[in-house]
Structure formats: C-alpha cells, structure tokens
Amino acid sequence: MLAGINIVSIFSLATVVVHCLGIVTAAHAVMVVNSYRAAIAWGISLITFPWFAIPLYWILGKNEFQAYSQALQNAYLEHHKLVSQVYSTILEFKAVLPAKFATLERLAEVFTPLPFTFGNEIELLINGKQTYQAMLSAIAQAQEYILLQSYIISNDGVGNKFKQALIAKAKQGVQVNLLYDKIGSRKLSRNYLKSLRQHGIEIRGFGSSRRRGNRFQINFRNHRKILIIDGRLAFMGGLNIGDEYLGKNSHFGSWRDTHLKIQGAAVKCLQTVFLGDWYWVTRKIPQVSWQVQQSKQDSQIALILPTGPADTLDNCNLFFLSLLEGSRERIWITSPYFVPNSSIVNALKLAALRGVDVRIILPNRPDHLVVYLCSFSYYTELQKLGIKLYRYRSGFMHQKVILIDRDLAGVGTVNLDNRSFFLNFEVMTFSIDTQFIQKVETMLQSDLKVSRLIDLNGYEQKPFWVKLAARVSRLLAPIL
Image (cartoon, rainbow, N blue to C red; front, side, top):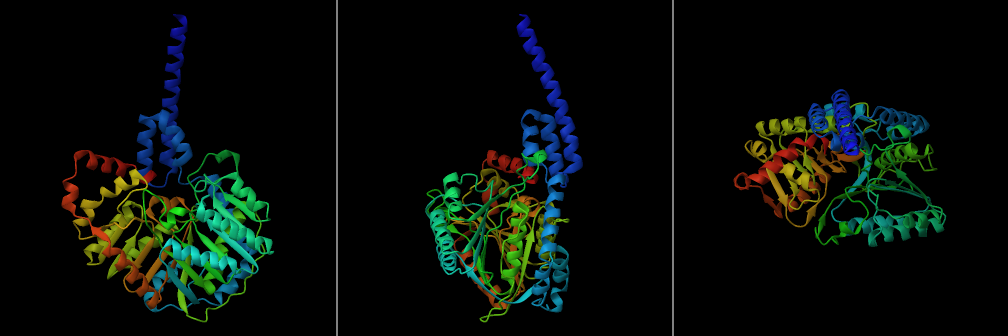
C-alpha cells in the first residue's frame, strides 16, 4: 500500500516538475525564437504537452542557437581573413549591372562579399542521368584537386560509382576533399567512409555543434551540393548522391531535378563557399587554385549567393522577398516543399494583385506527409487572387528554381520553406543572362505540360479530415 502511495507521489511530483519546466521552456521559446508564429506554436506545445515537446524543442526548436551561431560567425570570419586575397581576385571580374538591377546589386553586396561576376558559362542539367554523367566525367578529368559536398550521400549504386571515381583519382595523386551533412547522410555506413579514408581521401561530416553545450542541436543542416574540379569547373543544384535521382525509387519513380555546370569566375565563388564550410569543420583550408579562368564560350553574368544560420541577417528570406516584391511580369517557382512564412505568402499575394503571372509547381507525390498536407492549406487564399498552383505528375519533382520576369533566373538548393530560409546552409546561382533565362523558361514550360493545374473546387470537396489535417499542419509550419 505504502509502495503504491510512494509511486503515485513520485509520479505527481514528476508531473509538476515537468509542467513547470514546460512553462520555463515556453518562456525561453518566446524570448529566443525569431518567428512569432513559431514562438506561439512552441509555447502552446510546451505548456500543453511538456513530456513530448520539451525534448523536441531542445533538439529542433531553436532557430537561433547563440553559442553555435557565434561560433559559426567566428569561423567564417576567420576563413574570410585567410582568403581575403581571393576576394580581390574575384572582384576583377565584378560585373557592371544595368540600372534596373541596382536594388538587387545593393542587396547582394550586403548579403555576401561575392559579387555578380562576368565571364561565366552556365549549363542546365535537367535530370539525374545527365547530371551524374557530367559530374563523373569531370571527376575523371581532374588533375589537381576535387572538392565534393553533398547533403545526402547514399551507399548504393550511384554512391559507389562516386566512391570508386574518387578513389581512382586519389590513387593518381589528386587531392580529394569530401564533405557531407551528418543528419542528411546519417544512413551512410562506416565502411563506406573507411574505404575512402584508406585511400587518403579527406572526408568530414558537417555537424551543428563543436561544443558540448549544444551537442543535441540538430536544427542546423548543410543542404548545399557542390563539386569543384581544379578550380576551373563547378557543379551545384538540387541533386544529392543516390539512386533515387535516377528514378530507381519504387515509390517515386522518375525523379525531376535540376543542376548546373559552371565555368568561369563563379567557380571561384562556389569554391569559397565550400572552403568556408570545410573550415568550420576542420579549421584548415586545403591547397587550391585561385586563378580565375574566364569562360571562352560565353560571358554570362552570375551571382553565387550562400545563405545560412551564420548570417547576421535573414539573408535568404530577405533576398527572396526582394525578388518577389520587385517582380512586374511573372514569378515562376518550383519547389518540392511549400511551407512559406507569412512574409513570403504576402509578397506572392501582392505580386498577384499587381497583375504578375504567379505560378508555383509542387510535387504530386509527397515524401514528407506533414509538409505535403500543409501545402493544401494555402490553396484558397492564393487561388482567390489568381495565383496558379500546379502538381507535377511525371514522378517526383525535387528541383529548386525561380524565374523572375525576363530578368533573372535562379537554380540551387533553397526550398520554399522556413528551414531553407532560416535554418539550413543553402546556396543559389542567379543569372541575368537572357539566353540562360530563356532556357530556364523552356525547361519550366516543359514541366508545366506534365503538371496538373490545381482546382480550388476540388480541394473544397475533399473530406473534412483532409482539410483539418492541412490546417493543423499549417499551425506547425513555423517549426517544420
């Protein structure tokens, strides 16, 4: 009897303690989390469901982790000092933009020391087969060094092709540096990594913490995908390294993605992005070439824009807001995830009210159910203003592309969600080259042909539970 009373007393005491801790943690969320919507969502969850919400908050909840953010900023500042001469070399290729891009140019100067550069050649790669063939061919031709970075590296057919290609070059004396994200590549086996290291390949995992105090903080992830060959050739875009990008996933089937092959001054800009991430992990900078090789084939103007939680401002969100607010003719966006914050939603609405042709292409099949459901909750408010939402029906659509008027096209790693805008390390390539913009337009027109225009009435006729699930998912949007 006494034992039973003691158990009840201990449980009651534990309940009181946990609920008190939930209140204290809720207060912390209100003070620390930047987004007021996220702060409200966390506050309610922490007070109502503290047993579940407290551990989740300390793992995922903080979108500004001071110790980590400061450490990142210090690391990147140190990196910038060490390669300061690089920026002076790149500045020799700084482009003079037309007057209509003055606002965009000023923003770019605030957000990154990397300028718009001329002397570039940018080629679209629009599927996994084309992209991997080009990347593996470039690796085979490397003479001095290879810098490879990927959010996900899979131990499968494609992953092993890249492993063997890198090992082959390492045996030839080529310096190879490989960087992966510890969360994105959490399934990567130790044997895979061991076989690379045995051949002298420098491989590191990018993690959120170098300190004991935030060892469980996994909110910040490096979502970039970059390949640099000898400082003369670069690849970047939406493709990770895995079989699914060749359409070998039985659930998704064919996989639609976009990558870029880049030559010219922009290669050095991408190289500095990789080296900044490498320096954060290792506090070292590998030997690389800084001589800029201007493209002889073309002279496209391009901007490499890296963003992430080390930024002093919300660079990614602010830059995209500026693009949307400055549009006058069209906004075409493709994104696998559509969980925009209120500022982005309002910018899209205002664009539609100005008469801008706003089209957003989303996947027809989900890979994250909650995120997929959340996108439904935006249907009514967006379509009432004439914004056109499409579902891509020819497999899974994973590309991250934006087209603004006839003036600007961007390809990279940024999804239309809070994680990309505030939490992840991302990188985009923007170009104002007319021919490149036309190629992106043609590519997206092909995607639209195999996409279904969403009918608002169809959503209104869905069962109540679907609409309820969509609204509940919308409430979770700030913390997804």
